[in-house]
Figure 1 (cartoon, rainbow, N blue to C red):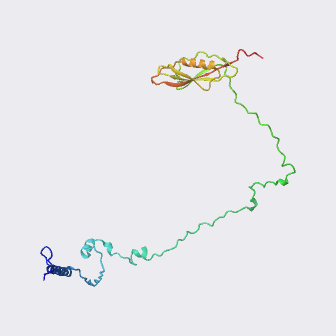
Figure 2 (cartoon, rainbow, N blue to C red):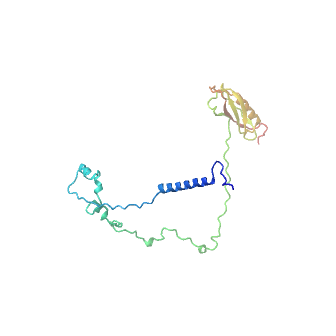
Figure 3 (cartoon, helix red, strand yellow):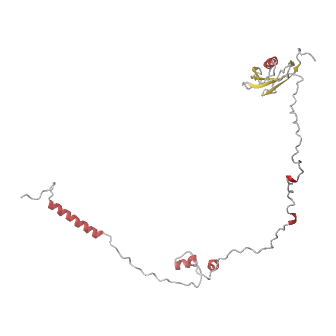
Length: 256
């Protein structure tokens, strides 16, 4: 016969079970030794209350030495014979009562005789009017003719500088001629740029023009010959030269 098989490492089956049993017993003993046990709380009797009546007032030092208290208000309890009686013990809730009226109310009187006097009278019905009176119409008047703004006729040609160049002109044109035309001429506006030396460096005609090519070319030539006072800024300054031309009667129009 063969014996019980051996466990690798030198352990037999019987030895293994003996060690396991010893460990279980040791664990149970530790649980019983260190496990928590239910303890019934001990009931203590409530200490008996003692009352002491102070017949004479005590100083703070005597109060501290006798009762181990430093605050004298610990002995002040609500009492019907103290200030708490008037403060809240005997106080009863009262409902709000309005103050008595000083004078009776004075109601405004209503004059029924004046009711409707301020309202306008009712309009008369159309049936109360005489027959045919409501159907009459006022005569339609022709509208007034539309009045046009009077057009001012220039009796002589004029010249003006506008913009930043106003006040810097040195040589204004001596005289400006009148230009013949069948219609009234408008103004010629020339935009110019002046350098720091006061000379016109560029000039161009702006719309609308005068209606006469000769007058516009003359305005452009006059604007290029203008001279202005020199200034320190080197940048060019822009402005406008405005020519209001006098309109003359054309020579080929025969007198009536």
